[in-house]
Image (cartoon, rainbow, N blue to C red; front, side, top):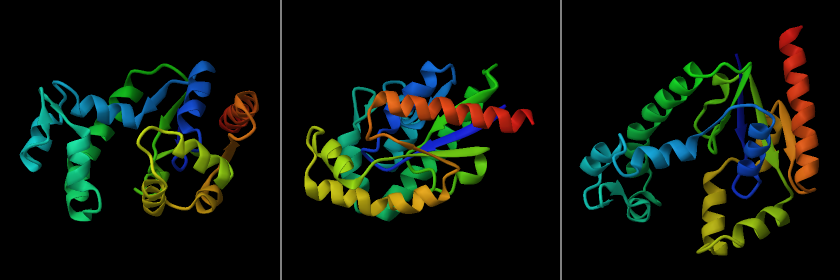
Length: 196
């Protein structure tokens, strides 16, 4: 089975690109969705997170806003949280792989390079767009401020560096059809490589 990692900085169009691959028949594992599930009502991580960060639980789920306040700008607290969540997400990822019959699977992982996961996949695709497009998209999000955007960018590997490390790049600033054309071409190249 071919494993593909999909990543990109905030506002680059990663989620939409993941949907394109799903529409092309490639099963997509969304790491953010897995985290939501783990910390949602009845989620496997709720008890562990609650033990580590009291007062972040609401109605049997972890309140992400309250948790965010505990870990934002606190590297030690963030590491404690990641030590709980990452092994659980990796387990979910393995369960996902075990349940697939497709020849290829795609993993949508926002901090793929930042967390050193690049060696876990056969191919890495980076989604990218010019900075002004990225900024416009991110600032259109609810409750987003220029300051918050800047803080997030500082925690992420620069786009140029991600592009250098990528096996393939999908440009997302020229519309969904252009992105889809690139996805089809990349998928074809990947399959051809593995068939050789």
